[in-house]
Length: 521
Image 1 (tube, rainbow, N blue to C red):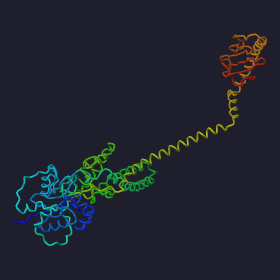
Image 2 (cartoon, one colour):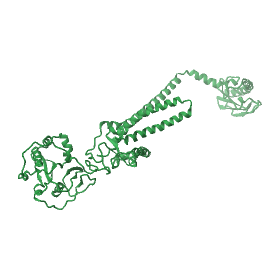
Image 3 (spheres, rainbow, N blue to C red):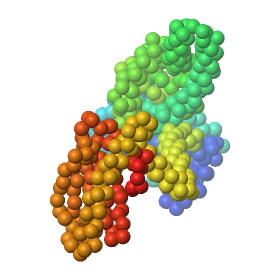
Image 4 (tube, helix red, strand yellow):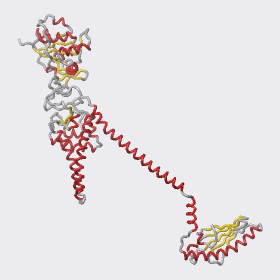
């Protein structure tokens, strides 16, 4: 009869009377492991098979050693069914024997609908509890051999106690479905969804920022060369335009080759992605070729054309794919993701410099707005200073300058000298007629009479009419000049008004002083 193969399952529980703070370091020492490694590779996946063997006595020794430090384990007979991974509270646990899962479900420790995946499979499914199997005597003796009830194994023959062997982790290496991290992904299977395998939006932004810094340095050097060639060809405008055109085409070519060559190369990542621990693959986790990397690069044009929504899709799609990733059939995954190898069990933490790189765009926007505000404040300050200086200079000017200017504007007609002489000659006769009327009106006012209110004509061709009015004792005599073309243009339709003040006459006129032969204004 062939020996029955058994598995020793670490349950992750502590035996009664023991303190967990002391149990796990002691178990790590017993297994000759680092405590952190024990927690990451065993406890985080418990229940988990830590040893499989057809030598039951050897497994019992290992179990006794674990029991001595307070760690709960169970010996489980293994049938023909494959080992399973189990989703417990949303976290993959295992691998563990099929019979162990069945016992947990039958006992009510786990629900009958718990999700399981066969080792090496990509499919999660509800666990189906088989009909109670018939077991031979040996199986019945070992199916539930547990450290929680050591009296059940008291009758089993034990070999002499020997030092615990160095713990090997081959039996504990997970190989569950890709959707549950820790599984081995078979070549040709699609990459799983979720953020443990696929790199998220902010990590990709940090990688892109670092790549942009590198490309900026390369572009500056490139355009310095292009500018030098343009300067040498400055005598030929057509050649300068052609050189600048080649410069922009060359810049696009540099960016294309940078991304396409690096992402299709052995490391599958640009320098920025390498620093951030991510790489580009196809949707099956395999290395992409140069042609697909080229399509992915130029697909970024479409991602940017729709207000960068294509880039933002990497933050909320199931495989963290941007639009250009979907167009090229690519994914951006963590460095350790490889077909045929165990999937990562934990999402790598974002390094501190990744957050620094993510802050650069925000810092750039802040600097831009701050610079704009500073420039505008300086501009407004300069404008205000100029206005204040102008007001100050105007206030300090000698007001006599304005008086002289006003006098020159009022007294200077600007007409030719011959025409001004003709006007003065004509105005002499007008003054003589007005003097006669003034004498008449002054006599009435001095006699206490009211000012006459009438309009008179005159034989003088220069005079259109003479108006007499006013309120005593201030009577007025107004001479309105003719509009006839017989008199000079400078005197047409002008007006001279005299007001009697009791002791003399005050003169006002719309004519310039240099055209009048008498004092006025």
